[in-house]
Length: 600
Ligand SMILES: Cc1cc2nc3c(=O)[nH]c(=O)nc-3n(C[C@H](O)[C@H](O)[C@H](O)COP(=O)(O)OP(=O)(O)OC[C@H]3O[C@@H](n4cnc5c(N)ncnc54)[C@H](O)[C@@H]3O)c2cc1C
Ligand SMILES: Cc1cc2nc3c(=O)[nH]c(=O)nc-3n(C[C@H](O)[C@H](O)[C@H](O)COP(=O)(O)O)c2cc1C
Image 1 (cartoon, helix red, strand yellow):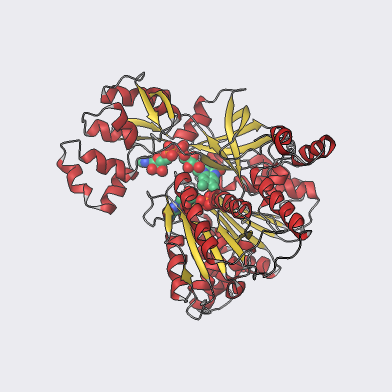
Image 2 (cartoon, protein in one colour; image 1 turned 60 degrees about the vertical axis):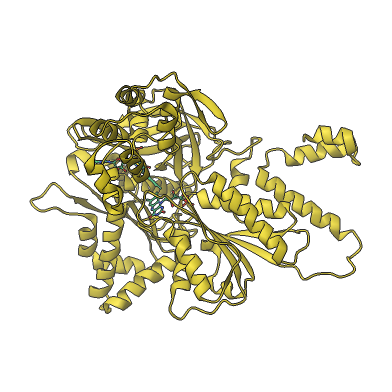
């Protein structure tokens, strides 16, 4: 109900007070408003007579482990719901939570995603390893429930949530609700679980209306929402405009990498180096048409998606995932197509995943044609998901722009050309001055150190170099004096040296102290960043001894190879045994001096 309506019906406040309240609330998110309402309830109740039999107050801690913002947003929503129900709740990043404090907590809800190949998100790393430890403290005092976010197309679906749920029980904590694992279209499941969890807590935990509660997660929304009624986020994306799309690999390079500049309103989107940009895209209309032709359906057929009614072609272009084939889609197709190859796959999970990983929907339905109607086709497909791109600029240098480094996924397979949905949209179909819906995926685990004197070792292969362009721009704007070392790998020096001119300019300005390059296809033998790292092992240790922060960005496989190289460096250069070397690398990660941002 609008404030003005409320006022007319019931209000004990006068017009002037009402206007002041409206001004104060302007620009606040729903989370912030829920927090304020808890705050006001606290002030209000403090002026009331004390209840006859005061109960002990139980604080509910909502811990989130999140890398690309989904679990964080769910946790914040859960927090505002809890506060709205009068609970004393706080929402805390696992990265800001001292693991030992778990022994002091009574009521904890955990919301955690899974990354890498079944690994915890970076900000959950320390807490995850703390509870996995053989000698971890008993947690008999703790009541908990775990909500997992993941992607069922990965082998280890919601593995981190499963780990937390199982291990907390092993340590004697009492589960108050079964583990819920949510897939990419998590909204309905997370809302149901949140309601169930709060109902359960209401029944179990003594409480009183919430008072002032620290919610560190709100900071970024306050920054984002400065000039607008509702902050831009994944569900309310900002329409950015394409300013520039420039190829930064040579025409004869295998990889087609684009530098994109998008225009934004700095009052609407405020990003920091280390963040990624989420991009909602449209599928290729030509691909949608090819699918329609293949299944013999009319694109104008009306279909239902949830509460929405639209035509089938529109749904294929704007709502449904066409290029990433899910194993369950293949399994469902086996029931339609008369194909022994598929039938054999249906009971072989690994085989099914491998088959799906190498194909798009168009390959499946072309290889194994089968009749299908429009509602059944729609039911086979997952909702279209946004894609993320590391931000390659600093807003201190480009206040009203955001830069991305996009490698266009393009390959030949199964007798046809394939184009990545998002990279194809951004690289090939989005025209200059056209708009694209974007949002910030904040990454607090991949930040510059607060102290500008801290040395940085930045390791990136391919587009993994993007955030370091932002880092160096930011350090220049800050006037930071810390030394900077870039270790970059790609295929060929002459074709694939992404942002070469930027690095040269930074070096000339005295802001890039060391550059190590690994071009894998230039010599007789392949050379990768992890080899360069080993060669420079002694110097790496010297920088680490001087307090350097180490960053790794790019493909998951490269990140794993760098991890092994670091252990080797501690073994050979610091003369540690392998366990102690591994422990040294783990300590760097736990102390948030070794930061990773890895993607497929
Ligand atoms: C935090 C984060 C940051 C990222 N930053 C960047 C960035 O800075 N720059 C960047 O370019 N990307 C980045 N990515 C990756 C990006 O989000 C997309 O995943 C990527 O652009 C591909 O998306 P797409 O929609 O174009 O391809 P999709 O349509 O999703 O297709 C990709 C799929 O195609 C298949 N495939 C790809 N190549 C082949 C092949 N040769 N043979 C067979 N199958 C193949 C694979 O199954 C792959 O999963 C980032 C991802 C994350 C999570
Ligand atoms: C590089 C990468 C690796 C991932 N690995 C897994 C995985 O092994 N298992 C899984 O269930 N989900 C995996 N996911 C899916 C994420 O868990 C899912 O997108 C989740 O919503 C992310 O939540 P967050 O934004 O809070 O980190 C992965 C996602 C990315 C980008």
